Image (cartoon, rainbow, N blue to C red):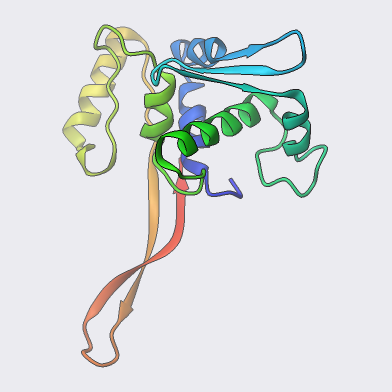
Length: 171
């Protein structure tokens, strides 16, 4: 996303690839009679009410200056609610993160069937385990994020180093 939340978008999209994931998303977004939407983060044990004027103000289809996702109000309310959760818990906005964060927030803690790995702990053996379990249970979702770095050379020493470019991509 334009606001640096590709991690959130790819996490939601990975949930949307399975029946259980779609059910978790459905349970998390509750429309209210006053036009507002309540977003329940079942894994985090938190919920946030997104008022109708807040939705309209941040909807890029209505307000072209908005930097949130366009076309899907469910995704928009998830972005707005996650931003509130992050500000409350860590003081951060949506810029930069890992899919694991949105998955941890949304997925209810239960029965040990949910396996979420992030970063360097996602090894080929763990991917194989996820896919093997998926064949048995007919359900799996894997999302990946890549942080972009640039290989640089120090002109004084001639040694290479890596510089964070400040961009990341989720898939």
